[in-house]
Amino acid sequence: MAEAIPGGRVIRLGGGTGARLNPLDRGPRRSDASDEQHEHMVKQRRIGTLIALVEMTLNGRLTAVEHAAIMDALDRCIVRTGDRPTLRGVYDEMGQLAAETDAAFRAAEGAVQPRFVLRRFVEGDLSGLFEEESTVEFDQDAPIVVTDTSELFARGDLAAQLTQVCSTAWIQAVISDRGARRTRYVVREEGWRDMSSLASLQMFQQWLKLSRHYGISNIVILHKMGDLDAVGDADSLERSLAYSIVGDIENKFIFRVNHQEQVSLRERLSLPAPHVEMARQLRKGEFLAYVGQYSYLVDCFATSTPWEYELFKTDDAVSPADRDDHELSDIDVSEIERLWPEPIEPDAGLEGWLTPIEIPVERQQ
Image (cartoon, rainbow, N blue to C red; front, side):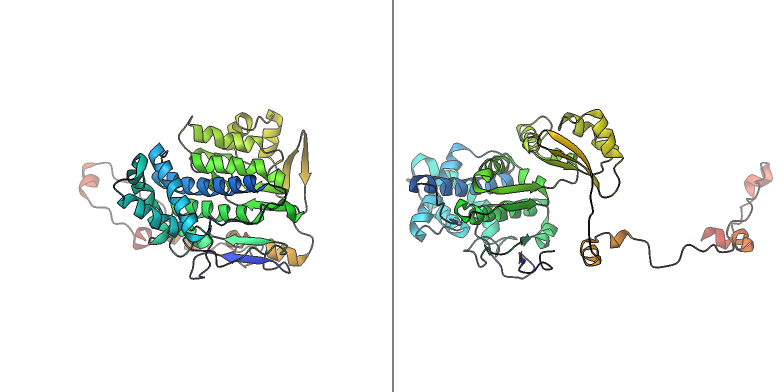
C-alpha cells in the first residue's frame, strides 16, 4: 500500500537490505520544551529502551545493580561519542565496566548480564540492524512510511519482540516533534508485541500518554483479545497492565469474533451482552465502533475502485481454484462400485476365524 501511494516510503530491515535504525537516536528538538525538559525526555526514552531489551531477553526484572550499570554505561557512551550513543557503544562501555575491579556500587557485577543481552545485537542474530548509527532517515514529508520487519519474524518470537522495541523506539524519537504541527497516525500491526514484558508495557503506556501532546494518534491492531493472554502469567501485573492499556484506548473498532472471545469482550472491555452477540454475527465489512461514549454499527465500503480492490485483496491464498464448479457432472456408478464394493459379511464360525480375508487392491489403496 505504501508503495502504491505516491510519495510513500518503505524501510525494510533484514533480508540483506543493509538498513539500520539506532533506537538510541536523540530525535528532533522539541520546540516547546525547555532544555532541561528535553534532555530529561531523551534520557528517559533511551534508558527505557535499554531496560526493555534486557528485561525482555532475561524474562525478569533487573536488579538495582544491573539498572545502575546500564545507566552508567549509557552515560559513559554519551560522553565518549559526543551524545551519539549506540547499542554497540553501550556494549563496549559495559565491557569496560565489567573489567573494572574498583567500580562503585558493584556496577562491574551488574554489567555482566546486560552485556550478554546486547551481544546479540552486536555479534548475534540481530547484528547489522540496530547496533550502529541509523543509515535511513524518516521522510517528514512522506504521506506514509512503513517499517517492514517481516523478514525478522522468522527468527522467532523473541527476535520479533526485540525488533519491535527497537523500531518503535526509533519511530518515537523521530516523530515526537510537536513543532511539526501535523497529525500523525502510528499503526502497530501486531500490537501485543509491544506488551511482551513489564518494561515494554510501561514504555508503551508512557508513549500513549505523550501521544496527544505530540499530535499522534495510535492505532493498535489485535487479531483477538486472547493475544494479550500471551503477556505474562495469569493474574500477573503484566497481563493486567496490558488489558488496562487496551481498555483505556478511547476509540475501539471490533470486527467479527468467534464464540471464544465472548468472555474477553464482556469482562475485559465491559461490552454489553447484546453487543457481544452482535459482534459474533457481523458480516464481512461490518464492525462495531465505539467512539468516545457513543457506539455504532457500521457497514463500510472496503474499496471504491477496481484498482483499490486488487491492492487490498489479501485472501487469494484461500480462494478456490480457477475452475468451473457450477455444472453438474454424471456419477459413474461402476467406478463407485469398484472403489467401494459391498462389504463382505464375515464368517463368525471357526472356519472364518482361521481363514485369512483377502482385501482387494483397490480398497488397500
